[in-house]
Image (tube, rainbow, N blue to C red; front, side, top):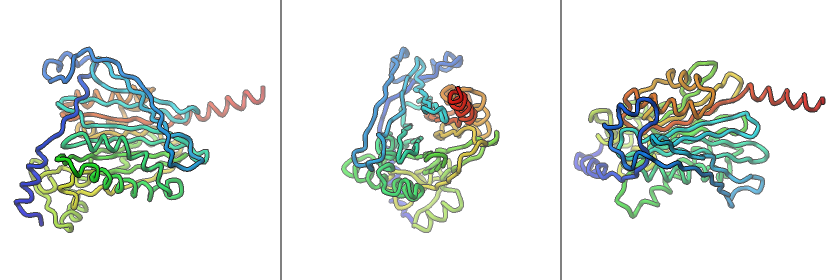
Length: 357
């Protein structure tokens, strides 16, 4: 069990929060109603930011194409950072949206990367929700997928590679922060698509939900301290789960797994739970989001709202704005991935028609 003095020490430590400013207010019709009620960290007439960067992993295998960061980001006058991407063959498209919301600081990060290995297309999508500061989430955006692509068993045993990479990246993050006074942490909810095989991994309370034949199916389960298996794991490790407004590890942290959180690391692990699925024509879209969305938008509503938009970028923005109007008090970030099965069929037919001509 954790002694009372240790818990108090952790509570004090957790109170020192790092600051990362980013975001503003959404640009929908509800802006005027809330504009005067929120603190802004920059002028209302925010500038547009666009850009794309290509990162080459020199340590990767010879038959791997460069890893490309697909987050071409633009930020509108309301402070919603968003963008979209489509694969060259039209089989896959995605959109993303990120908004500071009512929080003073922005601690959400997201990442989208693509590459090819042995001619197999690799796509990676990630949501990282920081707590106690932004550094852990930012570190995951900078390193997690790059580390995964370097894993020697990434193509032969993807599930093993994901599990090992998550935990090793956590070790490396803690090592990089050993001389600082910060003790922040982060969730990670990621979807890795290797050809037509999907691997969804989760640490913390961000979540990934898929729409299959119109039905919302969660592909991750939130890591909450009062989950019976999580509570047992924590208590077996000598920790305590206490009620402090909500169930918390040591009375401090409202999730039972996370990256970082050095003071609670014995109990708050970064070992992911992983689900794998073979993508077929019933799979319509994928929604990954931080708890700023899931706190106020049920899985079924998220899927319904996303399915109502033709373009995934519009779907991601719609979800972000819906969470805000429903009262989310957190940062809100989501990625919508659409599987364009009709596009696959039409592309094949078009190729056949051109060949016959």
